[in-house]
Image: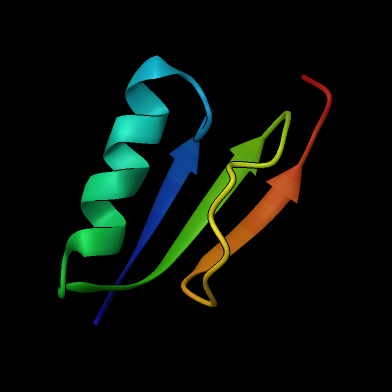
Length: 52
C-alpha cells in the first residue's frame, strides 16, 4: 500500500486530490499539511496543521 503527501490539502486542487486519494484502494495513508481542518474524519488521513 502506498502513502501520499499533500501540501495544501484544503485548497481548490488539494481538496480534490484528497478526495481521489481517499477513494483509491492503492493508498493506505494520506499525509496532509493544512491551514484548516479538511472536514474528513477517517483514520486514513494524518493531518498536520500549520500556519504557512
